[in-house]
Image (tube, rainbow, N blue to C red; front, side, top):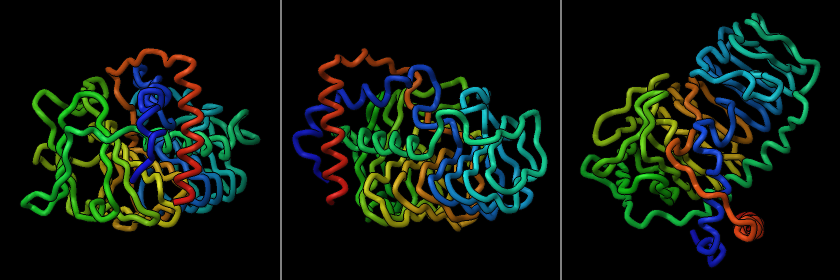
Length: 330
């Protein structure tokens, strides 16, 4: 993957643009646990945070939504709506625990303290949301891979990702590497991922995965320093990991339980392995039977970049436009 001179010239600007809000501890991408611009079909379990669907939604009939908010206020969602379905909702959720909702057609069986909205929240459109995600994906891609980190296949056949820096670590993977099977994140001395909602780590990882229809194979599990991650609502390290499928315009296949958020704004995402998804999903559509846990990508809670100079911001915006054009020609 080569972005040329534009990639090297505005890395600092791009980082400042994307991560400027990270010090607040709020998600830098979206408050929703899941947001798709098209259709969403999940034949399994709960979505522990918010759900926004730009097309039709088919849900497992007993599904609960927004029942594990991790201290988030519903006011961080547009119109305080934790459930948005712009098309038809079939097999509506058994319970919406927190927040308002908008469903164009179909019914929500039980609602907690929220109420039904008459239309999409004011100022919210899926086109504007995904224009932003497009920019986010390009910005992440523009960051130069961290030279002191390393990727290899270890003796157990895992994809071993050695992380050696506090703060931002950027990893580029080929589609073949992503399909290797399982991941062990090996953190260097003094480095850590988050261990609770209040105990933040000092390290976070963004992984750029190449390919128009790649597979992320973690069927046998994800480890951190050789210890298997315990999936679920307490897999707090997930909030420090982001997979950026910047090139995917076909189908992204997720094989196994996911630790970290997935940014695939142009892709149809498929996860039919009946596993857990610890993180946020941003995609063009989704089909699967995963349970989503509300561990949205927070970025660095300790990172506090200086405000980007005006000239730097201008250069960054120009370069972002170039990156998007070049990526789509690839």
